[in-house]
Amino acid sequence: MDRSGVTLERMRSFARVVERGSLSAVAREQGVGQSTVSRHVADLESALGVTLLNRTTRRITLTDEGQRFHAEARTILRLVDEATDGARSAGGGLTGTVRVSCTAALGVRHVCRMLFAIQDQHPEIVVDLSLSDARIDLVREAVDVAIRLGPLVDSSMQCRTIGQSRRVLVASRTYLARHGRPETPGDLSRHASIRMSNVAGHAMLQLRRPDGTEVLIPFEGHLLVDHGLAAREALIQGRGIAAAHLWLIDDLLAAGTVEPILPDYRPEPVPLSLLIVPGRTRIRRVRMLVDSLAASLAALPGLVQE
Image (cartoon, rainbow, N blue to C red; front, side):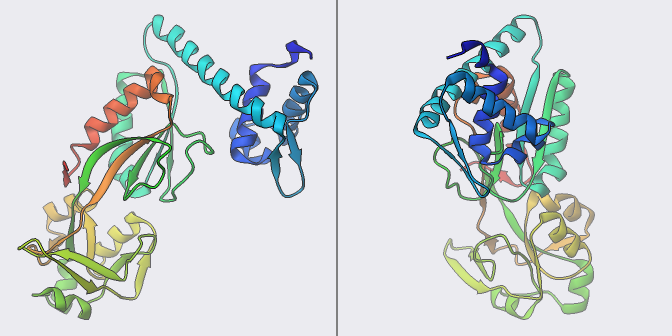
Protein backbone atom coordinates (compact mmCIF):
# COMPACT_ATOMS: atom_id res chain seq x y z
CA MET A 1 0.00 0.00 0.00
CA ASP A 2 1.25 3.48 -0.90
CA ARG A 3 0.36 5.48 2.22
CA SER A 4 1.43 8.73 0.58
CA GLY A 5 -1.47 8.31 -1.84
CA VAL A 6 -4.07 8.21 0.95
CA THR A 7 -4.64 11.96 1.18
CA LEU A 8 -7.37 13.89 2.95
CA GLU A 9 -8.52 15.39 -0.34
CA ARG A 10 -9.04 11.94 -1.85
CA MET A 11 -10.72 10.65 1.30
CA ARG A 12 -13.14 13.60 1.28
CA SER A 13 -14.04 13.03 -2.35
CA PHE A 14 -14.58 9.32 -1.72
CA ALA A 15 -16.74 9.96 1.37
CA ARG A 16 -18.90 12.49 -0.46
CA VAL A 17 -19.36 10.18 -3.46
CA VAL A 18 -20.64 7.52 -1.07
CA GLU A 19 -22.99 9.98 0.64
CA ARG A 20 -24.26 11.64 -2.55
CA GLY A 21 -24.25 8.48 -4.67
CA SER A 22 -23.04 10.46 -7.66
CA LEU A 23 -19.70 11.62 -9.04
CA SER A 24 -21.30 14.51 -10.88
CA ALA A 25 -23.10 15.79 -7.75
CA VAL A 26 -19.83 15.83 -5.80
CA ALA A 27 -18.07 17.56 -8.69
CA ARG A 28 -20.68 20.35 -8.65
CA GLU A 29 -20.43 20.57 -4.87
CA GLN A 30 -16.62 20.92 -5.00
CA GLY A 31 -16.56 23.16 -8.04
CA VAL A 32 -14.37 20.79 -10.08
CA GLY A 33 -14.82 18.54 -13.08
CA GLN A 34 -16.31 15.08 -12.70
CA SER A 35 -13.05 13.62 -13.98
CA THR A 36 -11.22 15.17 -11.01
CA VAL A 37 -13.52 13.46 -8.51
CA SER A 38 -13.27 10.18 -10.39
CA ARG A 39 -9.47 10.45 -10.38
CA HIS A 40 -9.44 11.12 -6.62
CA VAL A 41 -11.33 7.89 -6.00
CA ALA A 42 -9.26 5.89 -8.47
CA ASP A 43 -6.00 7.18 -6.99
CA LEU A 44 -7.22 6.32 -3.50
CA GLU A 45 -8.11 2.79 -4.59
CA SER A 46 -4.72 2.44 -6.24
CA ALA A 47 -2.93 3.62 -3.09
CA LEU A 48 -4.91 1.21 -0.92
CA GLY A 49 -4.68 -1.66 -3.37
CA VAL A 50 -8.40 -2.46 -3.12
CA THR A 51 -11.61 -1.60 -4.96
CA LEU A 52 -13.79 0.68 -2.86
CA LEU A 53 -16.69 1.32 -5.22
CA ASN A 54 -18.60 -0.70 -7.75
CA ARG A 55 -19.60 1.65 -10.57
CA THR A 56 -22.28 1.07 -13.19
CA THR A 57 -24.01 3.52 -15.50
CA ARG A 58 -26.95 3.67 -13.08
CA ARG A 59 -25.55 3.47 -9.57
CA ILE A 60 -22.53 3.42 -7.30
CA THR A 61 -22.28 0.88 -4.49
CA LEU A 62 -19.69 0.12 -1.84
CA THR A 63 -17.62 -3.04 -1.84
CA ASP A 64 -17.06 -4.77 1.50
CA GLU A 65 -13.63 -3.10 1.68
CA GLY A 66 -15.23 0.22 0.76
CA GLN A 67 -17.81 -0.16 3.52
CA ARG A 68 -15.11 -0.62 6.15
CA PHE A 69 -12.91 2.14 4.78
CA HIS A 70 -15.80 4.62 4.56
CA ALA A 71 -16.67 4.15 8.24
CA GLU A 72 -13.06 4.77 9.26
CA ALA A 73 -12.61 7.64 6.80
CA ARG A 74 -15.64 9.49 8.20
CA THR A 75 -14.20 9.24 11.70
CA ILE A 76 -10.82 10.52 10.52
CA LEU A 77 -12.35 13.42 8.58
CA ARG A 78 -14.47 14.43 11.57
CA LEU A 79 -11.42 14.42 13.83
CA VAL A 80 -9.49 16.50 11.31
CA ASP A 81 -12.33 19.03 11.18
CA GLU A 82 -12.42 19.24 14.96
CA ALA A 83 -8.64 19.59 15.23
CA THR A 84 -8.62 22.30 12.57
CA ASP A 85 -11.42 24.13 14.33
CA GLY A 86 -9.55 23.95 17.63
CA ALA A 87 -6.36 25.31 16.08
CA ARG A 88 -8.20 28.19 14.43
CA SER A 89 -10.05 28.99 17.64
CA ALA A 90 -6.76 29.24 19.53
CA GLY A 91 -5.81 32.04 17.17
CA GLY A 92 -8.88 34.15 17.88
CA GLY A 93 -12.31 34.37 16.21
CA LEU A 94 -14.39 31.66 14.64
CA THR A 95 -13.75 30.80 11.00
CA GLY A 96 -14.95 28.26 8.47
CA THR A 97 -18.18 27.27 6.77
CA VAL A 98 -21.50 26.29 8.34
CA ARG A 99 -24.14 24.84 6.02
CA VAL A 100 -27.74 25.57 6.96
CA SER A 101 -30.99 24.28 5.46
CA CYS A 102 -34.31 25.99 6.10
CA THR A 103 -37.87 25.93 4.85
CA ALA A 104 -38.04 28.61 2.17
CA ALA A 105 -40.62 31.08 3.50
CA LEU A 106 -39.20 31.11 7.02
CA GLY A 107 -35.71 31.53 5.58
CA VAL A 108 -36.62 34.54 3.46
CA ARG A 109 -38.85 36.23 6.04
CA HIS A 110 -36.68 35.79 9.12
CA VAL A 111 -33.71 33.41 9.11
CA CYS A 112 -31.67 35.39 6.58
CA ARG A 113 -31.57 38.36 8.96
CA MET A 114 -30.64 36.09 11.87
CA LEU A 115 -27.70 34.73 9.89
CA PHE A 116 -26.64 38.23 8.83
CA ALA A 117 -26.51 39.23 12.50
CA ILE A 118 -24.35 36.19 13.29
CA GLN A 119 -21.95 37.12 10.50
CA ASP A 120 -21.78 40.68 11.78
CA GLN A 121 -20.53 39.26 15.08
CA HIS A 122 -18.27 36.66 13.44
CA PRO A 123 -17.17 38.07 10.06
CA GLU A 124 -14.92 35.10 9.25
CA ILE A 125 -17.83 32.65 9.33
CA VAL A 126 -19.03 31.53 5.90
CA VAL A 127 -22.75 30.68 5.87
CA ASP A 128 -24.00 28.39 3.10
CA LEU A 129 -27.80 28.67 3.25
CA SER A 130 -30.09 26.34 1.29
CA LEU A 131 -33.78 27.22 1.13
CA SER A 132 -36.08 24.31 0.37
CA ASP A 133 -39.30 22.82 1.68
CA ALA A 134 -38.06 19.33 0.76
CA ARG A 135 -36.99 17.02 3.60
CA ILE A 136 -33.40 16.59 2.53
CA ASP A 137 -30.87 14.08 3.83
CA LEU A 138 -28.51 16.25 5.89
CA VAL A 139 -25.50 13.96 5.56
CA ARG A 140 -26.03 13.39 1.86
CA GLU A 141 -26.31 17.13 1.19
CA ALA A 142 -23.41 18.04 3.53
CA VAL A 143 -25.69 20.20 5.71
CA ASP A 144 -24.68 20.89 9.31
CA VAL A 145 -27.97 22.29 10.65
CA ALA A 146 -31.56 22.17 9.39
CA ILE A 147 -34.48 24.29 10.59
CA ARG A 148 -37.57 22.09 10.34
CA LEU A 149 -41.29 22.81 10.62
CA GLY A 150 -43.52 19.85 11.35
CA PRO A 151 -43.18 16.42 12.95
CA LEU A 152 -39.72 14.88 12.76
CA VAL A 153 -39.08 11.47 11.28
CA ASP A 154 -35.27 11.38 11.15
CA SER A 155 -34.26 9.98 14.53
CA SER A 156 -30.59 9.70 13.54
CA MET A 157 -30.06 13.46 13.91
CA GLN A 158 -29.60 15.47 17.08
CA CYS A 159 -32.78 17.46 17.72
CA ARG A 160 -33.21 20.76 19.51
CA THR A 161 -36.88 21.65 19.96
CA ILE A 162 -37.55 25.39 19.70
CA GLY A 163 -41.30 25.44 20.32
CA GLN A 164 -44.67 25.39 18.60
CA SER A 165 -45.44 27.75 15.73
CA ARG A 166 -48.96 29.10 16.11
CA ARG A 167 -51.19 29.49 13.08
CA VAL A 168 -54.28 31.66 12.58
CA LEU A 169 -57.09 31.70 10.05
CA VAL A 170 -56.83 34.88 8.01
CA ALA A 171 -58.18 36.52 4.87
CA SER A 172 -57.61 39.87 3.23
CA ARG A 173 -59.98 42.80 3.63
CA THR A 174 -60.72 42.69 -0.09
CA TYR A 175 -61.69 39.01 0.07
CA LEU A 176 -63.97 39.55 3.07
CA ALA A 177 -65.60 42.57 1.40
CA ARG A 178 -66.45 40.45 -1.64
CA HIS A 179 -67.41 37.17 0.01
CA GLY A 180 -68.40 37.97 3.58
CA ARG A 181 -66.95 36.82 6.88
CA PRO A 182 -67.39 33.22 8.11
CA GLU A 183 -69.25 33.16 11.42
CA THR A 184 -68.87 29.45 12.24
CA PRO A 185 -66.35 26.73 11.28
CA GLY A 186 -69.01 25.17 9.08
CA ASP A 187 -69.09 28.33 6.95
CA LEU A 188 -65.51 27.67 5.81
CA SER A 189 -66.65 24.95 3.41
CA ARG A 190 -68.42 27.64 1.37
CA HIS A 191 -65.32 29.81 1.03
CA ALA A 192 -62.23 29.72 -1.17
CA SER A 193 -59.12 28.32 0.51
CA ILE A 194 -55.39 28.71 0.03
CA ARG A 195 -53.74 25.38 0.79
CA MET A 196 -50.19 24.06 0.97
CA SER A 197 -49.92 21.07 -1.37
CA ASN A 198 -46.84 19.76 0.43
CA VAL A 199 -48.63 19.51 3.79
CA ALA A 200 -50.32 16.18 4.52
CA GLY A 201 -54.09 16.34 4.95
CA HIS A 202 -54.43 19.80 3.40
CA ALA A 203 -58.03 19.08 2.30
CA MET A 204 -59.17 18.97 5.94
CA LEU A 205 -58.66 21.70 8.51
CA GLN A 206 -58.29 20.70 12.16
CA LEU A 207 -59.44 23.42 14.55
CA ARG A 208 -59.49 23.54 18.34
CA ARG A 209 -62.70 24.86 19.83
CA PRO A 210 -62.72 27.27 22.82
CA ASP A 211 -63.56 24.32 25.13
CA GLY A 212 -60.43 22.45 23.96
CA THR A 213 -62.17 19.90 21.77
CA GLU A 214 -61.32 19.56 18.11
CA VAL A 215 -63.32 19.80 14.92
CA LEU A 216 -62.40 18.71 11.39
CA ILE A 217 -63.66 20.93 8.57
CA PRO A 218 -63.42 20.22 4.83
CA PHE A 219 -61.01 22.81 3.44
CA GLU A 220 -61.00 22.65 -0.32
CA GLY A 221 -60.67 25.16 -3.10
CA HIS A 222 -59.07 25.95 -6.41
CA LEU A 223 -55.62 27.09 -5.25
CA LEU A 224 -52.82 24.80 -4.08
CA VAL A 225 -49.28 26.12 -3.64
CA ASP A 226 -46.07 24.50 -2.42
CA HIS A 227 -44.32 27.63 -1.14
CA GLY A 228 -45.23 29.76 1.88
CA LEU A 229 -44.40 33.03 0.10
CA ALA A 230 -46.82 32.10 -2.69
CA ALA A 231 -49.52 31.50 -0.07
CA ARG A 232 -48.72 34.89 1.46
CA GLU A 233 -49.06 36.61 -1.92
CA ALA A 234 -52.34 34.80 -2.57
CA LEU A 235 -53.65 36.12 0.74
CA ILE A 236 -52.64 39.66 -0.15
CA GLN A 237 -54.38 39.33 -3.51
CA GLY A 238 -57.61 38.18 -1.89
CA ARG A 239 -57.61 34.64 -3.27
CA GLY A 240 -59.10 33.03 -0.19
CA ILE A 241 -58.73 32.04 3.46
CA ALA A 242 -55.57 30.39 4.80
CA ALA A 243 -54.29 28.88 8.03
CA ALA A 244 -51.04 30.88 8.17
CA HIS A 245 -48.11 30.87 10.56
CA LEU A 246 -47.99 34.12 12.52
CA TRP A 247 -44.36 34.67 11.55
CA LEU A 248 -45.44 34.61 7.89
CA ILE A 249 -48.15 37.27 8.12
CA ASP A 250 -47.48 39.24 11.33
CA ASP A 251 -46.69 42.41 9.35
CA LEU A 252 -49.83 41.99 7.23
CA LEU A 253 -51.94 41.69 10.39
CA ALA A 254 -50.32 44.79 11.89
CA ALA A 255 -50.98 46.77 8.70
CA GLY A 256 -54.57 45.54 8.47
CA THR A 257 -53.97 43.95 5.07
CA VAL A 258 -55.30 40.64 6.40
CA GLU A 259 -57.69 40.04 9.28
CA PRO A 260 -58.25 37.11 11.65
CA ILE A 261 -61.13 34.77 10.91
CA LEU A 262 -62.93 32.84 13.68
CA PRO A 263 -60.35 33.89 16.32
CA ASP A 264 -61.81 31.50 18.91
CA TYR A 265 -61.02 28.50 16.69
CA ARG A 266 -57.29 27.81 16.40
CA PRO A 267 -55.54 25.61 13.83
CA GLU A 268 -53.15 23.16 15.45
CA PRO A 269 -49.66 24.63 15.97
CA VAL A 270 -46.68 23.11 14.18
CA PRO A 271 -43.42 22.03 15.88
CA LEU A 272 -40.30 24.04 15.03
CA SER A 273 -36.97 22.27 15.58
CA LEU A 274 -33.29 22.38 14.79
CA LEU A 275 -31.74 19.19 13.43
CA ILE A 276 -27.98 18.83 13.72
CA VAL A 277 -25.76 16.20 12.17
CA PRO A 278 -24.32 14.13 15.04
CA GLY A 279 -20.86 15.27 16.06
CA ARG A 280 -21.05 18.66 14.35
CA THR A 281 -21.79 20.53 17.57
CA ARG A 282 -18.28 19.58 18.72
CA ILE A 283 -17.13 22.15 16.16
CA ARG A 284 -17.25 25.59 17.78
CA ARG A 285 -18.60 27.53 14.81
CA VAL A 286 -21.48 25.07 14.40
CA ARG A 287 -22.23 25.09 18.13
CA MET A 288 -22.22 28.91 18.17
CA LEU A 289 -24.55 29.13 15.19
CA VAL A 290 -26.96 26.55 16.65
CA ASP A 291 -27.12 28.44 19.96
CA SER A 292 -27.62 31.79 18.24
CA LEU A 293 -30.31 30.48 15.91
CA ALA A 294 -32.14 28.73 18.75
CA ALA A 295 -32.35 31.99 20.71
CA SER A 296 -33.50 34.02 17.69
CA LEU A 297 -36.05 31.46 16.51
CA ALA A 298 -37.59 31.29 19.98
CA ALA A 299 -38.45 34.99 19.61
CA LEU A 300 -40.34 34.55 16.31
CA PRO A 301 -43.90 35.94 16.20
CA GLY A 302 -46.29 33.23 17.28
CA LEU A 303 -43.63 30.89 18.71
CA VAL A 304 -44.76 29.35 22.00
CA GLN A 305 -42.98 26.92 24.26
CA GLU A 306 -44.43 23.45 24.63
